[in-house]
Image 1 (cartoon, rainbow, N blue to C red):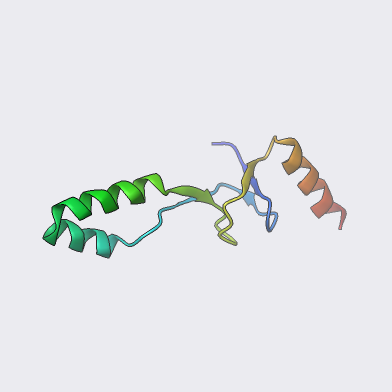
Image 2 (cartoon, one colour; image 1 turned 90 degrees about the vertical axis):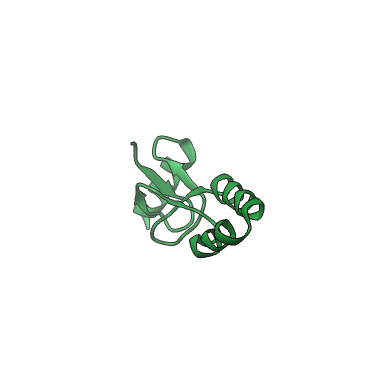
Length: 78
């Protein structure tokens, strides 16, 4: 996997995958209410996103993107 740059804090590295919601709520819904459990599970799976492990921002850019290169130059220039 190639490196990414955070557009928020300038972190360079791999993003982490964030899944919204709670696994505990998902388990309770599956145990007691099958249909809401399915709906909640689908929502959790479709709401995943890659985020910066340092600041949690969802705007990670591929390191070879023009905007990412510009951010790196600005960060190193300061």
